[in-house]
Length: 227
Image (cartoon, rainbow, N blue to C red; front, side, top):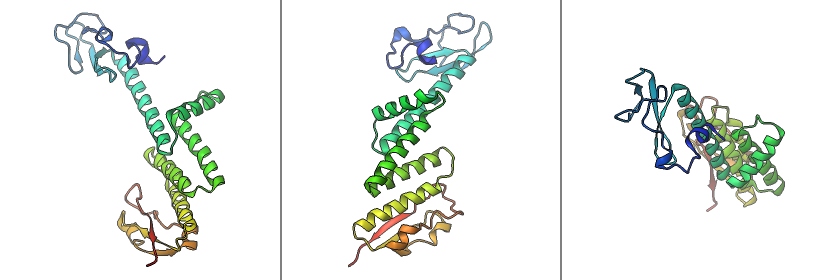
């Protein structure tokens, strides 16, 4: 049971009877006017921290220590939900996420939500590669690269692999040339509209360049369809 569950009841089952009373969490004095924001108790002078429970909108009047624990668990919940959404973006539902989470936690309690998403993506990409699902593989690599970017880690190599897999998918469809849609920044812009034979496109992907200033490079392949 998490911190929020233990002192405020199960999340998602909040009712008015579960809402914290408008009382100082330090000295217990009932406050004539429930505070709407954090302020000092008029009786003991300690700071009452106000938080809102998302499940039912109830106001919670916390000590500084309890507020710190509340914020930490809310942050952890948000990160887990982010990992679940990332898994959904590659076609895996919450059940698959929780199954993988169980597998990893059985090995070590140190695995977190990000590890769960990464393990799911790696397992899926291996299956897609064996099956020649290059379109699916491109999407999986893309979302792994996006995860790295959003968590502050180098993403470029996986973005490159995503574009190479995209080129492989186009090659199987009989496309013979691909054009770069670049221009996310001035440095990448020099590759804008360059056309590559499909054989070269399968081997290389020139953007993002090291000097890309856009953060997340949005350059990609476009089809060159014969007239």
